[in-house]
Each structure stands twice: as C-alpha cells, then as structure tokens.
Image (cartoon, rainbow over all chains, first blue to last red):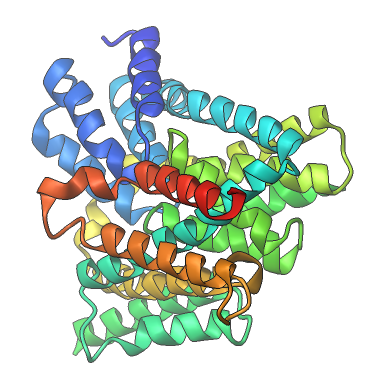
Length: 179
Length: 199
C-alpha cells in the first residue's frame, strides 16, 4: 500500500514544478504516477484525465483528488490535494505581500504597464484554441457568441449562462435520444 | 463580514467552473471585480500576471491572491488577509472535491449517457464564450491607454499583438513551444515595459 507521506511528496513535487496552469500538469503527473511509481496503468490514468475535465472545479485538483482516492481512499485524496496546492499557495502569498508593499514604486509600475496587455493576450488566445478543440462549427458558433455578449454587454452572470448551457444541452440530448 | 462573503463566493465559483483554469478566471473576475467590486480591473490584471508566473493551477493562484487583495482593500490587517486568502483557496476546491469523491463512488457509469455527453458538449462551447467575455472585460483604458497616438496605447497594442500571436500559434509548431510559455512572455513584456516607460 502507498504511504501517505509518499503520496504527499509526489503531489507536492508536481504542484511545485508546474507553471502555466492545470494542463501543464498532465505530463508531469503521468511521469510520476504511471512511469516512475507505477501506481496505475496508462488507461486508468487517461480515464482520470477525462473525468477531471468533465467535472467542475480546478483541473489539477480534480486529478490529485482522484489519484489519491484510488490509492488510499478519502484520506488519500485529501493528502494528494493538499500536497498539490501547498507550495503554489505559499508562493503566491509571498508575491502578494511583496507586491503590495512596493506597488507604488514607479519602476514596478512601469514593468506592470508592459505586462498587463500581455496578460490580456494570454487570456484571449485560448478563446481561439479552445473554440477549435470544443468542436464549434458555423452552425454552433452562436452558442459561444451569445454567451460572451450576454456576459459582456448585458452583465448577465456567467453562472447563469453555465446553468442555461447545462439545461439546454441536457434537453437537446434528451430530445435527440428519444426521437 | 467579508469572510462569509468570500467563503460563499468562492464555494460558488468552485462548483460552477467547468473546463479548466481560464473559465475559473472568468468567474472570479465577474464576482470579484464586477459584482462585489473588491478590486479594480487593473488590480485583477496584475493578479492574473502573478498567477500565471508562479507554479500551480491558475484557478487556485487567482483565488488565493484575490482573497488576499479583497480583504486588504476592505481594510483588514495583513494577518486577516492571509486568512482570507487561505479561505478563498480552500473554498474554491471544497465542493468539487466532495462531488468528485461521490462520482468516483457512485456515478462512474453515467459518463456515456447521451444526455450527459450533449450537456458536456454545449457546456464546452458556452465556456469559450465565457472566457471571451473575460478577455473583453480586461480591454480597459487603464491597461491599454486612451486610443490615440500616444506611447502607452501604441506600446500596449504591440505587446498585445505579439503575445497573442506567440500564444496562439504554439499548437501549430511544437518546435517553438518554449517561445510561447506564459512565463517567458510575461517576463519579456515586463522588460519591454521597463525599457519603454522607465527610460
């Protein structure tokens, strides 16, 4: 049986060395969990990836929760998840306190004047890559466009948009399935 | 009491985030900047910059930093703000973890149901719109400058175009993957900002 401390250490390392969001964590986690430690086979790992994508929440945390659960039950899932987020949270807090202290320093402000438009671009680019991978066609283009306009122009809550999408998708699937 | 509001808000954000970090960023932005007005759009952009440069999931990082800044802006001392940041990051993962464990136990076999499959497909498309709205809301005059022939606006537009191009074309050619890493792009734009505005 896998030891808790081993589980914690593995996910601590994966969490610490992942930069650039949850999906960057997949190859790292796969190397640790499948290849190095041989805790599960490739197919099980891919099932975990698929379910982590389908469920709400933070992708990397969903991964850690599932791997931990399969190895050591509920306690294992908590150990893996905490190990995964401990270092990121500590580092971001350090940055937050430091930045707060020097936020009015002119040099730092100038650096951030350069960074801000880059950040907007980093959020805008995945819109177009995701549009491709989510299977949007000319016939379904109205769905993301309507969602964006509702939120951006009319101030509709994104949560409401998600609820409508869930209801609409379920209804469509239901009608299509029963006919 | 900001702590209860943070707890409630981030529990909600956690359970309604589908499809990865950027959709969580969209939800956090709407709640924290538009709805509760705990911070300005510009402060939120800075939070995003730091969240992308430091290790870990971007959703957790943004939640941690947003909780911290929200408490400080509401006038709480640093210790309370650290507490608020931990509260936000735990709240955002709590409900998904519980749901995940329940699904692992009971619901695994529903994933091939056509209703569930269609729901996921429509949801994924709507999320693209969600992230687009978040990007549109970040296009502010504070970040880009007033649209005219001035240094701030022209520099910002060029930085945006370059970073967007590199970030978008990363999937096309894996050979240049290192050029499109967010951390490198942010560091380069920071250097550009220093050279453009400081000197």
